[in-house]
Length: 224
Length: 224
DNA sequence: AATCTATTTCAAACTTTTTTCACATATTCT
DNA sequence: AGAATATGTGAAAAAAGTTTGAAATAGATT
Image (cartoon, rainbow over all chains, first blue to last red; front, side, top):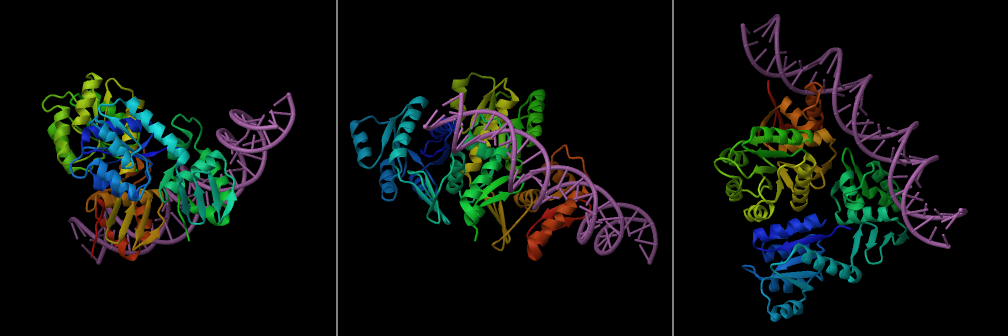
């Protein structure tokens, strides 16, 4: 499953470089060039991990971290040019999960990110509720009207993306790329079949949440 | 949705080649053979992405990029024959988003373009409001007086272009080229029919936003 | 190897959209 | 006003996209 990573750095070139690598590694990237914007995005977007530069004009990384920790347990990796022990300690005390010292290689950064994501994947508690559907990420369970339903892998991934990006219209190609992977060769009709079974399993009422966007693909939205 | 891409290269044959591929991939293409012209076009036209050759007589690609960055965050992909490492860094420092090394294949170029466009599409939350009409690009939904209306692909594309270029008069040919593509064979009266249904669906008040420009085509403008 | 489940493919039925066409209506020009 | 040209409209044909059931294929499990 694709992850959304927020890159916070006030140096544009450094941010771009990091973004490029993250993007090529298959992550979704959001960015902010200041602390306030970063905090706002954490509040409003569905972000999985933050790469946070420590030295920024205005609010510094530690302050941003402290603020975010008042309302979110989202993993934070500090990017820092400093290498004093005190920073590590300070950052971790404030709730950071890891830190990387500039300059760093793409490989190193990816390794840290993957390590953290793996770790939180086990510990994190994600729970989405949209209309009468509830999705508990940890247990991978879906309930409709509090009744458990059994989904296959593809159905589950579809619903996961739909619920995460409620209201967004997806083309079949986008869904294939995200769930099946860039290298998928088969036809786009496959998506239709999975949509069919997913609608069926979601039942009369919740099945209608999946709307057909004619000529494009599908959109998930609570309809009354 | 069709994107407008500006190709900047002083070698005519290279430019033509790139343009052809872009056109076949369904993009709308503009071109410039020097930096000054490119900058002017970015200022005055509504461009979604720039393919910028680094080595040009007169202003080079990096200088052009630097200049553009003083007033626009538009994605820029460098085309370069120069060595990778140094250019990547320099280009990205100046605000470029990616770069492609010549010679490149059409597939590679398209992949880069799509990657950038996708990223931009994800990061930017586009929402247009013109008069009583609102258009949310992500969900592909249109509301008139906060009431959702259901548009077909062609109607949607028409309204999208109209709202994007509010006030501009379009000929039927221009609309056909942008929405239907260069290989469209049918007659121009098809546009009229779609305008008719679009006006109908927009309703009494908003339908009047689409004005007929006699002898030319149509213009979208808020009238009071 | 046999059995089950999940996934993909396929094609027919169905739905919606797009195009065409004929005629009504409107605008411009002489 | 009348002719010529351009646009508006409703209905029907044509094209395109979606849904669905069933069958084939692939993957896992026993």
